[in-house]
Image 1 (cartoon, rainbow over the protein chains, first blue to last red):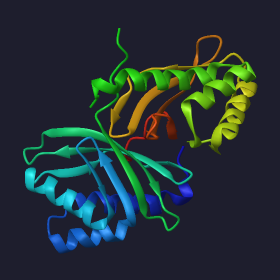
Image 2: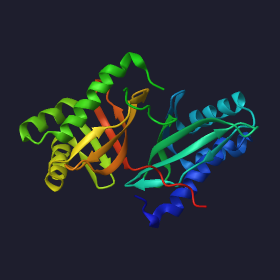
Image 3: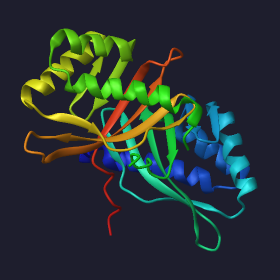
Length: 129
Length: 129
């Protein structure tokens, strides 16, 4: 499922995105967000719906304030087809415990910046018996 | 992660969507596609990128022609937040063997019809050692 010709560039983009979640210096964080997101980029997760560089940066700042010294770590390769991507990650507390696992599915803009991320926590629930 | 107040309606929508993959009567299939998709709906999977009722119906017809008597079966509950959803499914051959497993992530329009489905096969690959 992976187009190896573009994996390196896309993985760099995703790793920059992950770095933005872990960068607590406001200037550095804003620079990472601006580098990796399109101007109208939108991030949705179960806890929020934010659009644009300022909205996304404020969301990251809020998470960092509520979860000091926690880190986002990518836990899979980056799967891609067309202009879409998918990868898994985990949110890790300072003591090493995993607070949540998640899957991000997103879309790139024509310049290769992130246009949308839809984040889901955990795995889908099994079917009822 | 599931908003139980809307699960029933959303699950009905998703089950109708799954039924459209399994309906080989052209008139019936087109009716299911029209019922469940917005007019400008877009379906992307690793093998195709189709838009609109006619494009989506033609994609289903093509899959049915190449894989006679195969069936799509939903394999998880439908996870949802905001206007997004996620579920897993499998594509099953007449002898019961699983041809592929997949995850669909999508967006609903304001009327509750499907606006977008991004489909990924299998699970994301593990990180390199």
